[in-house]
Amino acid sequence: MCGIVGYIGKNNIKEQLLDGLRELEYRGYDSAGFSIMKDGEIYSYKAVGKIINLENKAKDFNIDGDALGIAHTRWATHGKPTEINAHPHFAEFSSVVHNGIIENYQSIKKELEQKGINFLSQTDTESIVKLFEYNLKNDAFEAFKTTLNKLHGAFAILLLTKKSPNTMFFAKQGSPLLIAKNDNNEIFFASSDAPVIGKAKEVVYLEDGDYGYVENNTIHLFRNNKEISPTWSILPENKEFAQKEGFRFFMEKEIYEQANVLQETLIGRVDENGVKFDELDKSFFDGIKDITICACGTSYHAGMVGSYLIQRNAKIKTSLEIGSEFRYKEPILEKDTLFIVISQSGETADTLEALKMAKNAGLKTLAICNVDNSSIVRLADQTILTRAGIEKGVASTKAFATQVMVLWLLANYLGDKNETDIMLKASKACEVSDKLHEKIKRLSKRYLHGHGFFFIGRDLFFPLALEGALKLKEISYLHAEGYPAGEMKHGPIALADPELYTIALLSKNLLFEKTKSNIEELSSRDSTILTIASEEIETTDDFIKINNSNHYMIEFYEMMVITQLLAMEISIRLGNDVDMPRNLAKSVTVE
Image (cartoon, rainbow, N blue to C red):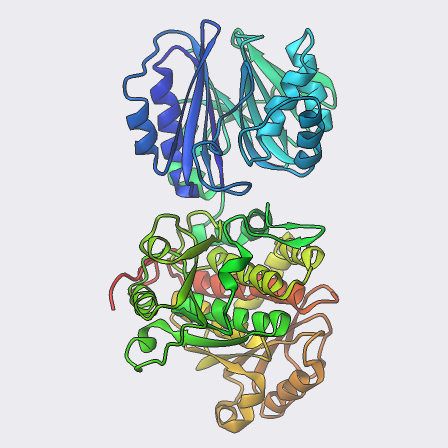
């Protein structure tokens, strides 16, 4: 969820860059930095943590008059959140900021190292600026184009070099970047609208493959290797609307972001050889005989999915505990147990207290969390960050998706399995098509006035059923329960009638016939049934088709998105504020 800001002008450039970074804080970050070009010199500052740390570090630095600047907020992907890994990245006489991933950076880095070029950071971004300087013979723009042609992956790039001191180079491929301007001859770059609203009037949203440079306040934009005239649009005036990027609610935006944040969760952690964690050493798991996962709410559901995956892939006995119950059950804590806690915020009081108990009992502890330097992260022995970025919607979506992905990675890591290709396909399965969303919008009007919902599934589709029911009750205020499909006949089926809505999660790859039989049991009792599956079941009332796939986790993620969208659309039809449901808070810091 990194952010980019650029500025060309003479109006207190340091503050212009810092203001822009502040407007991107909602995206989440763990470090920040900027570079400013003035009179042929580049001045750079970087800091780990909040932007205030960067401000304090650069408090005595001031520049007046015309200058060029680039700035960045980073969410660690390649390499830990350190000052060396923070952006901007440097070579001998150039500086760069970058969002996205350079897929072939390792081969670029190896090639340049063989030529005697040294690297300081663990990032993919450093390869861009080092390659640019290697390519620079005479003309900086030609070197920039040559560099872009060598890069594979997704990127938004701003680059400064002393060899062309009045020029800012830019490029966009698969990661958002815009150019904005005002009547004062100021030019802005940003990765979203929010940093430029109130400062600029017109904007150009760059397309994939666009690149160019700004020199002497003139924008040179190239598309398909031909220079074109920018097409300007009027900027929106509402900053919250800009942060929502055109979506009706933050929750909707965050559902749509899931494919991208899952990719960020995987970056630097998977390759053709399997899973690796820079933040962990395999020796940490020496002597571990079993695992306990402890969490609350949505994180508990993610933990339940993890328990299935770890036992299946790593063959390690894994138990599950609810944080608010664990503290009071007088648990038996053995030192050969790894204690895993999961929290979006890292401040969940019940989970934090359970972690303290495990630490006091001498257990090894591992946190799976979205917020670096949070209480849980500081206390745990080791941490894996989920990289979801800030989640503004109270009902968790992308945090759940990334927690499950991290647990899946951990299951592969502990079991020496390689499901990288499946993980990448599962991430892509979270992409929301207009056709799918429109179908769910239409269906939602039929599920407003019953006396309750059952979400049913088997195996790890049972915790997904629990999560689907939780999402619906959180934001629609309708009664909903998640059940293992095979448990319906043991009592709950007594509730079945036309006003009981059943959302059935039917996997082709896990217990298909048994789950199908459970659906038919409900159908014969006249329950109204919506089935989510790759194969239509004739006896059900409604059907949302997912793609045929050969792995249950691809199905899992595709169904996850559908249940999230369904809950949201039902809630919107009922007139509720999806982002701020009643009685709930984003971070539960009380018992």
